[in-house]
Length: 475
Image (cartoon, rainbow, N blue to C red; front, side, top):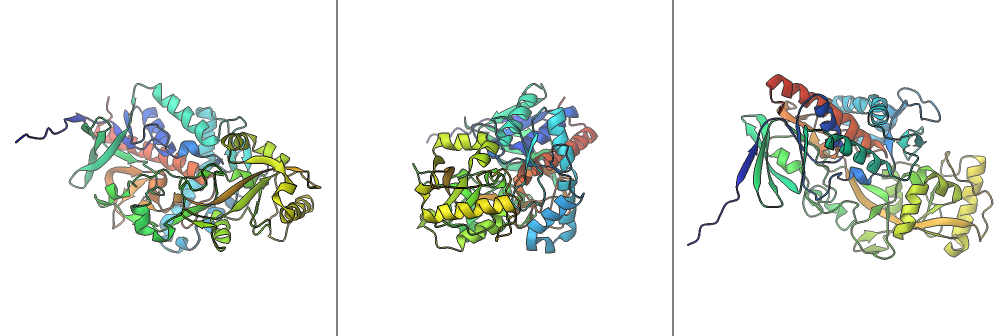
């Protein structure tokens, strides 16, 4: 009888290991290398960048020199608490510290990206749920997520302390007693390897894990399309070693994912960036406006899903997203890309029907004179004042999509992963969507990239201190 050949086991020692190459992982790696600590970054996908590279609306920060108006020092904190909703009533003290860290370090995050990394973030918009414009993006053609991720990755790859391994999936977190000492992982060539040293998890959420973690905690979302590729969540790897989970049932359904006319039944949708509404876009159902487009994602989604879906496989609605020329110019890089992909088209209002024409006229009046009857006060770059049947608009069909998971492993304000009794797990940090507690029941647009930078940098700094203390710098 033939004996099966086991894959070889390779070991690498010391330095720090980061799981996930999205913005949280890249921010952590940048800090570690700044402290002289070698970094091994493991990414299971064939390309680095995670979902961060797809982010298209921007990154929040306040106060910054780019904001068109100044805001009270606590406004961002208050908006985030308000967005968190009922979840804020539990573990309030920890949430206060996490939100205070997120918003309090937001200005520093923007400065770091602009001044030290050289990223352009000079344009600012006001997104849903925000009381002031504070979501930053660049003035060029590259979306903010891609601009930030590619810049950081390029910087990291210039360092001899950085190693990126793609197509490698972590299968186990290694421990010595209760202390994390590394990870075991398998790569595309089936070699099983171990990396020893402290670990930072930045592996993202579970919004694409429709048959696994998502189905376990939110079975009611079965059938919804998603902006995420189907892949398992990383949280079970961490609960195996005692990590506490928080807010796992809090899943954000984004109100606007494009329904591709060429593939309307595809379960994976491309996100219609929130900046489209932030810069003046409006939403119509059956030719009529139905809600304040600048409400939180949760509230806009609920307004849409209160109506019967147009189809059940996938479960989706038919909502028109409409921009005029002014809004188009303000979000031109985004819209040009959507036009190229066939997700939007330029057309005359008359092609949308009489109800749509009347709705656009009413919206134009409100944009010119003040608040509308839905309570919208900011119409941003909308410039069409006298719509006629021949007036040109840009339109796409959108539907709610599973987009972001607010839940994950519990962390404190130092990005340390906590166990079931709120004690830190030595040698382990986490940042980004793999964690829970930062956003509560609803994440504000622009705060995902911010969370990655703020807590990724904290994780990197704290891991560096630990590495220097234990002498495991990898040099």
